[in-house]
Image (cartoon, rainbow, N blue to C red; front, side, top):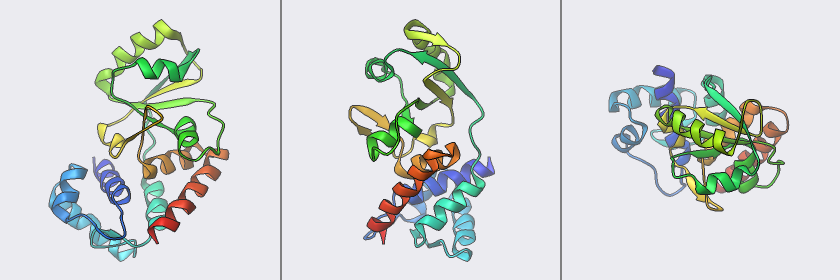
Length: 197
Protein backbone atom coordinates (compact mmCIF):
# COMPACT_ATOMS: atom_id res chain seq x y z
CA UNK A 1 0.00 0.00 0.00
CA UNK A 2 2.90 2.36 0.74
CA UNK A 3 3.90 2.55 -2.95
CA UNK A 4 0.29 3.09 -4.02
CA UNK A 5 -0.09 6.01 -1.58
CA UNK A 6 3.09 7.66 -2.82
CA UNK A 7 1.95 7.27 -6.43
CA UNK A 8 -1.44 8.78 -5.55
CA UNK A 9 0.21 11.82 -3.97
CA UNK A 10 2.54 12.26 -6.94
CA UNK A 11 -0.35 11.91 -9.40
CA UNK A 12 -2.32 14.64 -7.64
CA UNK A 13 0.68 16.97 -7.20
CA UNK A 14 1.57 16.74 -10.88
CA UNK A 15 -2.01 16.83 -12.22
CA UNK A 16 -2.94 19.86 -10.10
CA UNK A 17 0.31 21.78 -10.62
CA UNK A 18 -0.53 25.34 -11.66
CA UNK A 19 1.78 28.33 -11.48
CA UNK A 20 -0.65 30.61 -9.62
CA UNK A 21 -2.24 28.20 -7.13
CA UNK A 22 -1.51 24.99 -5.28
CA UNK A 23 -3.36 22.62 -2.98
CA UNK A 24 -3.41 22.70 0.79
CA UNK A 25 -2.09 19.61 2.56
CA UNK A 26 -5.66 18.78 3.63
CA UNK A 27 -6.93 19.00 0.06
CA UNK A 28 -3.97 16.96 -1.21
CA UNK A 29 -4.68 14.22 1.36
CA UNK A 30 -8.38 14.15 0.36
CA UNK A 31 -7.64 13.92 -3.36
CA UNK A 32 -4.86 11.35 -2.87
CA UNK A 33 -7.06 9.27 -0.49
CA UNK A 34 -4.32 9.28 2.16
CA UNK A 35 -4.05 10.62 5.70
CA UNK A 36 -2.74 14.16 6.19
CA UNK A 37 0.10 12.69 8.29
CA UNK A 38 1.16 10.47 5.39
CA UNK A 39 1.09 13.45 3.01
CA UNK A 40 3.24 15.57 5.36
CA UNK A 41 5.85 12.81 5.74
CA UNK A 42 6.05 12.21 2.00
CA UNK A 43 6.22 15.95 1.18
CA UNK A 44 9.19 16.27 3.57
CA UNK A 45 10.94 13.48 1.68
CA UNK A 46 10.23 15.25 -1.64
CA UNK A 47 11.40 18.61 -0.23
CA UNK A 48 14.76 17.07 0.76
CA UNK A 49 15.15 16.02 -2.88
CA UNK A 50 14.28 19.61 -3.94
CA UNK A 51 11.32 18.42 -6.01
CA UNK A 52 8.60 20.36 -4.15
CA UNK A 53 8.22 23.24 -1.71
CA UNK A 54 5.22 22.45 0.44
CA UNK A 55 2.64 21.26 -2.09
CA UNK A 56 4.09 23.31 -4.95
CA UNK A 57 6.04 21.35 -7.56
CA UNK A 58 9.39 23.07 -8.22
CA UNK A 59 10.97 20.40 -10.44
CA UNK A 60 8.28 18.87 -12.67
CA UNK A 61 10.67 16.67 -14.69
CA UNK A 62 12.49 15.58 -11.55
CA UNK A 63 9.20 14.61 -9.91
CA UNK A 64 8.17 12.61 -12.99
CA UNK A 65 11.56 10.80 -12.97
CA UNK A 66 11.17 10.11 -9.23
CA UNK A 67 7.68 8.69 -9.83
CA UNK A 68 9.04 6.54 -12.63
CA UNK A 69 11.70 5.14 -10.27
CA UNK A 70 9.10 4.03 -7.68
CA UNK A 71 6.31 3.15 -10.12
CA UNK A 72 4.81 -0.33 -9.93
CA UNK A 73 3.58 -1.40 -13.35
CA UNK A 74 0.13 -3.06 -13.17
CA UNK A 75 0.56 -6.81 -13.60
CA UNK A 76 -3.06 -7.66 -14.38
CA UNK A 77 -4.29 -7.14 -17.91
CA UNK A 78 -6.15 -8.89 -20.70
CA UNK A 79 -5.83 -8.51 -24.45
CA UNK A 80 -8.41 -8.70 -27.21
CA UNK A 81 -8.64 -8.23 -30.97
CA UNK A 82 -11.44 -5.79 -31.75
CA UNK A 83 -12.35 -4.72 -35.30
CA UNK A 84 -13.09 -1.05 -34.52
CA UNK A 85 -11.91 -0.40 -30.95
CA UNK A 86 -12.80 3.30 -30.84
CA UNK A 87 -16.31 2.70 -32.17
CA UNK A 88 -16.67 -0.01 -29.52
CA UNK A 89 -15.53 2.38 -26.76
CA UNK A 90 -18.04 5.02 -27.86
CA UNK A 91 -20.88 2.57 -27.09
CA UNK A 92 -19.57 1.44 -23.68
CA UNK A 93 -21.18 2.87 -20.56
CA UNK A 94 -18.56 1.49 -18.12
CA UNK A 95 -15.85 3.58 -16.40
CA UNK A 96 -12.44 3.62 -18.13
CA UNK A 97 -9.52 5.87 -19.08
CA UNK A 98 -7.41 5.55 -22.22
CA UNK A 99 -3.62 5.54 -21.92
CA UNK A 100 -0.44 4.89 -23.96
CA UNK A 101 -0.60 4.92 -27.80
CA UNK A 102 -4.19 5.98 -28.49
CA UNK A 103 -4.26 8.49 -25.62
CA UNK A 104 -0.95 10.00 -26.78
CA UNK A 105 -2.30 10.26 -30.33
CA UNK A 106 -5.29 12.27 -29.06
CA UNK A 107 -3.01 14.54 -26.99
CA UNK A 108 -0.03 15.24 -29.28
CA UNK A 109 -0.24 13.05 -32.44
CA UNK A 110 3.31 11.68 -32.29
CA UNK A 111 2.64 7.92 -32.10
CA UNK A 112 0.72 5.65 -34.41
CA UNK A 113 -2.19 4.33 -32.29
CA UNK A 114 -1.32 0.66 -32.80
CA UNK A 115 -3.09 -0.45 -29.64
CA UNK A 116 -5.88 0.83 -27.44
CA UNK A 117 -5.03 0.52 -23.73
CA UNK A 118 -7.61 1.32 -21.06
CA UNK A 119 -7.58 1.29 -17.28
CA UNK A 120 -10.60 -0.28 -15.63
CA UNK A 121 -11.77 -1.26 -12.14
CA UNK A 122 -11.25 -4.88 -11.14
CA UNK A 123 -14.93 -5.27 -10.24
CA UNK A 124 -15.85 -4.34 -13.84
CA UNK A 125 -13.56 -6.94 -15.47
CA UNK A 126 -16.27 -9.55 -16.13
CA UNK A 127 -18.59 -6.94 -17.68
CA UNK A 128 -15.77 -5.71 -19.95
CA UNK A 129 -14.83 -9.28 -20.86
CA UNK A 130 -18.41 -10.12 -21.85
CA UNK A 131 -18.71 -7.00 -24.02
CA UNK A 132 -15.31 -7.51 -25.64
CA UNK A 133 -15.81 -11.17 -26.60
CA UNK A 134 -19.13 -10.20 -28.23
CA UNK A 135 -17.25 -7.62 -30.34
CA UNK A 136 -14.07 -9.55 -31.06
CA UNK A 137 -11.64 -12.23 -29.94
CA UNK A 138 -9.89 -12.88 -26.64
CA UNK A 139 -6.09 -13.12 -26.80
CA UNK A 140 -3.16 -11.06 -28.07
CA UNK A 141 -4.53 -8.16 -30.06
CA UNK A 142 -5.08 -4.43 -30.50
CA UNK A 143 -7.09 -3.78 -27.31
CA UNK A 144 -5.66 -4.13 -23.81
CA UNK A 145 -7.66 -3.86 -20.59
CA UNK A 146 -5.44 -2.96 -17.62
CA UNK A 147 -6.84 -3.70 -14.17
CA UNK A 148 -5.66 -1.04 -11.74
CA UNK A 149 -6.82 0.82 -8.68
CA UNK A 150 -9.38 3.55 -9.31
CA UNK A 151 -7.00 6.42 -8.49
CA UNK A 152 -5.00 5.75 -11.68
CA UNK A 153 -7.89 7.52 -13.43
CA UNK A 154 -7.55 10.62 -11.22
CA UNK A 155 -7.66 13.74 -13.37
CA UNK A 156 -8.98 11.96 -16.44
CA UNK A 157 -10.58 14.22 -19.02
CA UNK A 158 -12.71 13.87 -22.12
CA UNK A 159 -10.95 14.27 -25.48
CA UNK A 160 -12.61 13.49 -28.83
CA UNK A 161 -15.52 11.84 -26.94
CA UNK A 162 -13.16 9.49 -25.04
CA UNK A 163 -11.91 9.51 -21.46
CA UNK A 164 -8.12 9.91 -21.27
CA UNK A 165 -5.82 9.65 -18.22
CA UNK A 166 -4.19 12.80 -16.81
CA UNK A 167 -1.06 14.05 -18.58
CA UNK A 168 1.29 12.96 -15.75
CA UNK A 169 -0.18 9.44 -15.77
CA UNK A 170 0.11 9.31 -19.56
CA UNK A 171 3.78 10.36 -19.39
CA UNK A 172 4.53 7.62 -16.84
CA UNK A 173 2.72 5.00 -18.95
CA UNK A 174 4.57 6.05 -22.11
CA UNK A 175 7.95 5.88 -20.35
CA UNK A 176 7.10 2.40 -19.06
CA UNK A 177 6.06 1.30 -22.57
CA UNK A 178 9.54 2.22 -23.85
CA UNK A 179 10.78 2.57 -27.45
CA UNK A 180 8.96 5.22 -29.53
CA UNK A 181 6.51 5.74 -26.62
CA UNK A 182 9.43 6.89 -24.44
CA UNK A 183 10.32 9.50 -27.07
CA UNK A 184 6.68 10.66 -27.07
CA UNK A 185 6.82 10.93 -23.26
CA UNK A 186 9.93 13.15 -23.49
CA UNK A 187 8.19 15.43 -26.03
CA UNK A 188 5.08 15.69 -23.86
CA UNK A 189 7.19 16.42 -20.78
CA UNK A 190 9.06 19.18 -22.65
CA UNK A 191 5.75 20.81 -23.66
CA UNK A 192 4.42 20.69 -20.09
CA UNK A 193 7.67 22.13 -18.68
CA UNK A 194 7.23 25.20 -20.94
CA UNK A 195 3.80 25.85 -19.42
CA UNK A 196 4.73 25.25 -15.78
CA UNK A 197 8.02 27.17 -15.68
